[in-house]
Length: 131
Image (cartoon, rainbow, N blue to C red; front, side):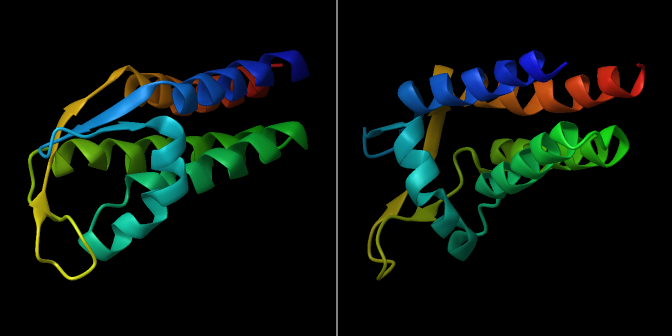
């Protein structure tokens, strides 16, 4: 089972290397950049980045053979991540002064690979429970 844990980790790494978000100012954000600056989204009411915390917690719980709490943490990660759809085309501050406004206009492949990485963890936890 421990070898299967490499699937979500590999998907996450791939998501970091792919373009993830397209913005209204014609900027494309790669996954690694989204990972680096996504924490600041909380100031604009964008919470999807925080799914990474629950994803990591779920992976650790799987590794220490706690599949039920891992399943719960993984499902929370997915639930937090899908809040990104709510933020599509919503006006967000483009700078710290709130002078410019931008919006996420398109989810790119990196975002969908990130979703797959997150979704694979509760599946892995569920399969771990079955053993």
